[in-house]
Image 1 (cartoon, rainbow, N blue to C red):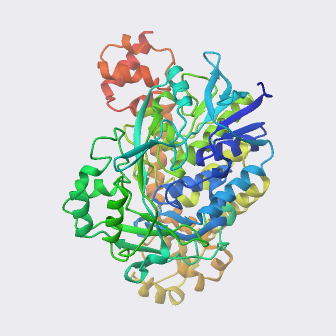
Image 2 (cartoon, rainbow, N blue to C red):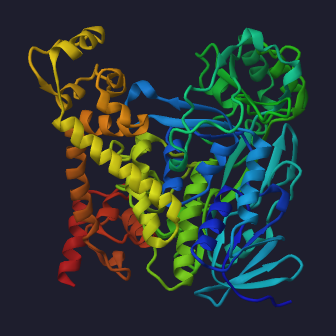
Image 3 (tube, rainbow, N blue to C red):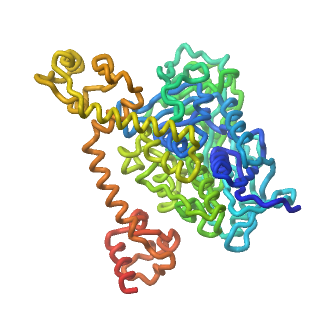
Length: 620
């Protein structure tokens, strides 16, 4: 059966697919979102939270470009916190607990009410191509949809296999069928794939938990929301507590005695697990010297007693899971509502992609999310918005967008995947960004909103908010550079915070450079500061305190751009280049770096190899 043609088709209604579909439709493209279950659009398969170390940066960047994730969590968050606040502004990140059901419904509402976006329930089984270009998709009931560009964002559904002890069964999520035929279609097109493993912890009945013996984590006050549209606003929902408890020696004994029953350790799971979010079996077996491991208990919503247990993810039989749970303080009588499980799934080697997330094998086909070897809602959404933007730009025959690693954590993530590939599930961290002082959470709008506006994704309301914020930052920066403070007004404060008093009138900017001085504190001393909100004050203070470091990183960025400007031809035959190892010739031929800069970031590349390439090109 033949259906009318679309500009863009997006396959998958998870966090990557949603951002891709919304971006494409908002850019004016007639877009179709096909997903296996319309009731699971925006569903949180694992923990009910958004953000975290590095991940919060991604959410802010998605928002700055005109995406939806930050707005959705602001509307449905039930706890907001700033993390890493003592380690400097570069690594401070925001994290929020979500009301899981409300978040899912909020995302579905955005999709259903987006102009130019049509949604349809179906299982795509085939990517239709003419050999070089994508042409459309076919479903399991032989529906055919044509499009100029296709975004594939299947999450863990490609060849998904769930493990609970010695039981295993095909599934993309618990109780949901996997997508195996489209995996075969990708392999027929020539894509190389591998297998990864991830997992999730059990869910417990909160009425059976003794929270009184646990540490309590409250929401920050004021709550730090994500979207730049919601700066200085309050959460819409009541805020709740999360809790911390710990495993015990008994927990570890149960693991060790039953490790042969674990799907991971029995050898039944072949895929590599997530190093930065290991299962409980992994933590106990790989770190035997640790006496205990931290367990977070996170409410799944305001209208449910269900509690997500972060830190008890495992692939053991259900009877062993019950013993594990009951060995943890506060969980002695806890009842399991849903078991934890491991899931193994297929991913496509990401070095088969360009920085636009378009595949090198099939033009017009874009991949986003866990199919590219990442893990996490935020990583998926960050890829989704870029894939959706570029699918739309390709459909409109406009120049595609590349966000590089000097501009955003999104750029860091994509460059890492495309240039280096990954042999383990990729998770973003602030340590991955060499220019992280420039890529702070609180300046994501200053870095990316103009880009979002230029391509047409940032609407007039967001643009006006951005312009007003930018003007206020410039105004406050000028004020603190000009304003002088006097000993009688400021010395009492300086002595209280443990820094030396001043003897004469001093420019405010000089005092802000002192580590002990907090510009927010000075609002009660300097009347002019009361005209500015805390987010404006924090941004200006950061710019001043880290001025020297920022200038140094800007010089490094300039050098980066020089190397990126040294372009490499797509058709270079690296097997002809003398002085390269066989390993490097294979990597360079597969990755096809676009520039000397990208080539230098390939694992194993040496200065001598770069010189060899340049000499070869000079001779040519």
